[in-house]
Image (cartoon, rainbow over all chains, first blue to last red):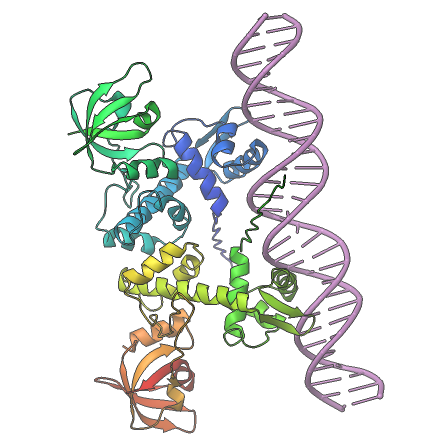
Length: 229
Length: 229
DNA sequence: AATAATTTTTAGACTAATCTAAAACTTATT
DNA sequence: AATAAGTTTTAGATTAGTCTAAAAATTATT
């Protein structure tokens, strides 16, 4: 008589592990490039030694490949997990802005928590409820159920051409400070922008909005994404 | 010259602490009664020794009063925290059922996680979005922003009178098994029920639904709440 | 009131995630 | 190629939450 044991090993992924994977995904150009220890430590506000420990654990679980002193790169599996977290994060951001009256700059912190709730039904139904949005409130593309998403051909305001009409489609810097600056100057998703003048001296840019004209610093111009109309 | 230091001590409450407080609230009749160690251990699926450890910590933080070998009772502060978690849990349940097509028995597990997201704006806006619901999908009252809620005069089917018309308003047992049993027999919130006969032998109850008649066991009759029409 | 049964607490150990400080390795500079 | 500077890893410690096993206290039973 044979006894057959079917053992399910359910690999639970912790919140901390998810945050490491997400950080490595963003730092490594959608998981394509190697990422080094210090960079991870910096974005996660932790110490390099902690990163080394965690990275070994994630390598054991085959979410990434780790070469001592070289850095880490996500595996297929790791990328899938990251994309799924990004999908959840961005869908929740849409929900918060469109249904719960959150502003551009308020969504990020709450979405950081909501993105870790684990329920396929929850996220697929939310997707349907929001009518399958393609972009989040910052203009970033939302991966679909299978992890597919568009990479849009965005251009920073700093690289925009004088005289062309552009539409604002997103930001690089998502800090509260920056988003509030944009809000207070009536720059948001969809705002039409034309470049009037680029000052070579300090790389500031003079732009025309709907009704007003204003000058923005190089720092702002670098962090604002546009698409030609 | 005087130097004034204003020190904010932000007492972060952990997920685990919240779950203990919630369990003690439910076990202790809305926080009014003492709760003993073993009872807490059982509902939280942990060991009595772990409960003792945690309970000491919660006493230090003044969420509850703890008397060695006697048990614990929530403080005002502890009750406030519990009520707030209950509010969040029940609002999310309404959201899941009304907006995301969840059924009675699917909501609980996801709501267990959503209830721990910390954002006043999130929960108040969700409340408004749902148009300030008074009851969750199981018929339990939802505390308002200030923690106030109705205690409804519900009666178990087992205590219902023969010949009277009742409306189903909730359940005691929220296990998946029970909720699925109700679903498959077309008993839900708002279903009209009339008691036809009570069998003294085994305490089973014969009831009339909209179109059909059926007999339910004592166990079912004990766990189904009604309100006279 | 003494003993038995049960409940609760203590003591000591374990895991996950972190830290500091020192050692090992890599890269840049002379 | 040798040294300096910077990065990464190791070793050992810490904290939150949990556990087992034994001790202490309470409650129930004779």
